[in-house]
Length: 296
DNA sequence: CCATGTCAAGGTCAC
DNA sequence: GTGACCTTGACATGG
Image 1 (spheres, chains in turn orange, red, blue):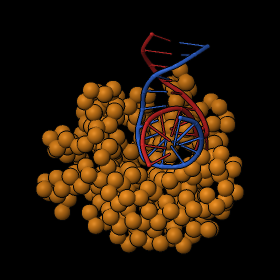
Image 2: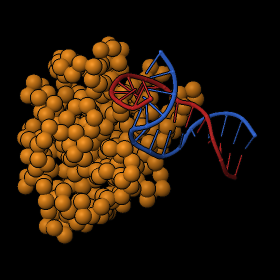
Image 3: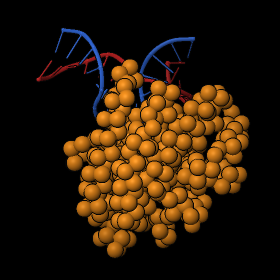
Image 4: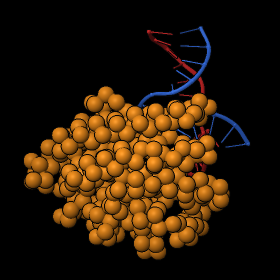
């Protein structure tokens, strides 16, 4: 099992997701931002390796405006050497990375333009991972999308849009159960119809479910991953007390985490801690997993 | 220099 | 129908 955290590191002192305003776009600005983001990403990955954190979610802001019409920049070519070096580093140390486009990516929207922009954004994420020379185990995770007041139709649109996506996208895309709209059972249904793997979010499952016990739910999501997809991925978080349901905790609670470990499948998977203090909680989680013998 | 408003993109829900 | 909220850092501007 590999353990990681998303996008931001609070220790190394740089950001791998620096961006700027669209109004101040220029080729020079873009080139500088990408260069700085990639060198910071290298520093974060080195830090992670030293700490034994082998799983990391790369920020969607690594290449700002990559899927926007304003982008006239062949960033894959310009930074080919950096991407290649990052990919070699990741592969040679047995690390794994993923990406998670934000809420604007909705392939089941009834609005054709929203779908078109979403596919362009997915394409950007996949091209970035391709540029690093990473295999199909480097995943891009999204939610199912919107409800649009008609769940069945929204699900059907997901299926038909998925089937028309290019192979470069479907080879990396996975769907995640969310905390308000589409639960694990919905995702499993979509897996049946499309083959898309289901990334199990344990915390979202606590927020929204159809009564499935945690261990059974986790197991059923694990089964949607093929060998070529790599070990299944899972997200872990905890409720922040006093905040609305679904708010992520500021730091990991050891008792709750140990309880969670007890409900995990025997089979191998990679775990991402979505806790606000980022690597601090991930390091504690790793320590506990080693103490309990789950990681050697 | 510091505080604060704002940022490409979409949606749901409470009122 | 309208506005808060999601989630988040940091850019950008104005004082």
